Length: 164
Image 1 (cartoon, helix red, strand yellow):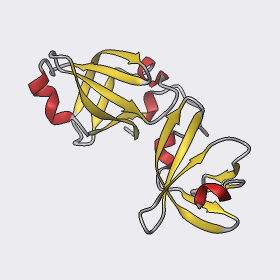
Image 2 (cartoon, rainbow, N blue to C red):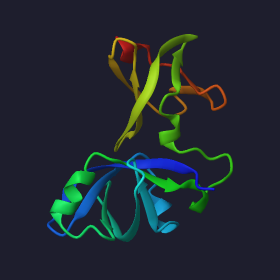
Image 3 (tube, rainbow, N blue to C red):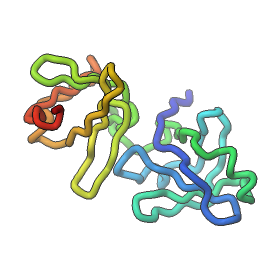
Image 4 (cartoon, one colour):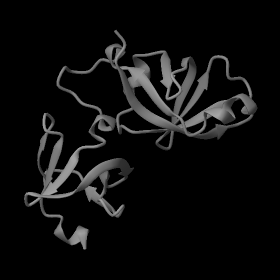
């Protein structure tokens, strides 16, 4: 049974022959070494002809997409792979699976994880509160007290000044 997991988003076209740029949700982009098929949010299945990593962005060439005109409608779509085809441990989780986790500080809800950013300094959680305000919270032992995957909660520490 196919279990789709989100790995990124198609951001724009690349060149004239229909290649697409994808912003990966995970820092580790090894998943293309284990699969030759992607699924798009519109549930269409595409075979990967070629992929390359370029400055943190993945450039995909897909079978059946041979021109910029054919690639253009795919911009903005989320990209999925079958989790069963990936070489991951049973308890491993993808960053995209953490979207929607509650961010907690001192037993108070900050908001929900809505996205991730990867700057050279490290992973950043994008947390959005009920007022649609966004906070950019760092990853790492200095800032994460614990993550409870069953309750879908991330417990932060030492970030008070980032919430002002």
